Length: 386
Ligand code: NAD
Ligand code: MG
Image (tube, rainbow, N blue to C red; front, side, top):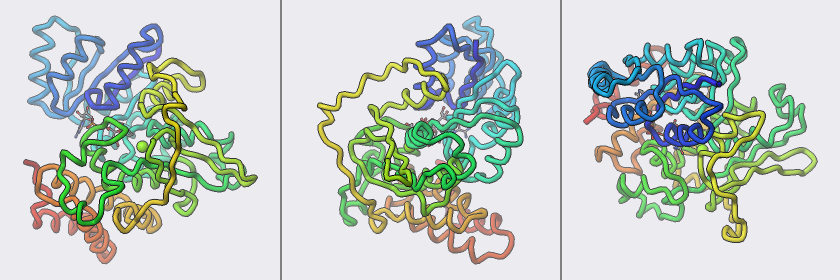
């Protein structure tokens, strides 16, 4: 039996992971499940999967969960906080860790899994965006196995030749082609973009996802974060990562070779495919995803991204090209801006403005970057959680 911890089990990726795992009960034992504050959701999952541990982000939620666990007579140990997350990511009886917490909050537990030499199934792209170099160095130093869950990166991983870790040039790869649906506002004019609401941004045409990544998809920041993620995962630089709009979301990404060959991975837009791929790798197993019916897809469309209407993508290219702490600055500003937008404190079109202003200020500062950055945001009131 393979022991599994699912970090962020109550979210969209967490639920899909448990759906796949439940199809193979003879192969996987759920050791730990974690959530932010969704006591009810985590309790339901504990009743069904009977893990040894459950982690809540704060002690009040942990207490509330513990009460319900005791009342139900379940043998689940409840712990709280980042230390709790780090400990369940590195337990001896855990072989695989699914990192599906959203945002930079997922970094420390994902890093704990890496440092314990686990197989890390990485959905939490922000972890890699904010700490790329350090994260990849730790993967190598600790002998961990890093498998991408993001559908594009999982597709690239499936299309990569052996030995790509030595550098893409050496193995005959020219570029990676990162596909993007374009999100719900792909065809919107600048005037229409100025009026969009959080509900519209969260209604993605092809994928059913958490609220933060849905807004990122609508602003194209998701693709920007994925460009950065691809640079780290595939040992390449931003000029070798081409974003291709493909509204059908059936081709999940492509690898272009020097001989003109382009290898693609296709499938229905359902995250259970990359999840099952990474759980079973290097074997294959059923995921519950229905077979792709090419006749009903009927056609594939492609177009270049419009960085004028979607400046977040350009800002991400700028951040990874600048290097150093700039991708972390980009990510921090984006997390604050998206939260403000979701809580009706910022317009959609102001998301890239806030990020660009933050990046400009951080570049100008010679020291105390973080302190000044946060002070500035605090003054703007953009940091508050409602
Ligand atoms: P989600 O919002 O649906 O779920 C997030 C999970 O993390 C929940 O279980 C939540 O309780 C937990 N969480 C949130 N904040 C936390 C905190 N501060 N401390 C501890 N736990 C916390 O998000 P999602 O859509 O499942 O996305 C998860 C990650 O996977 C993101 O990084 C996202 O970019 C990435 N991803 C998601 C998809 C998708 O289809 N949903 C696809 C590719 C990549
Ligand atoms: Mg993706």
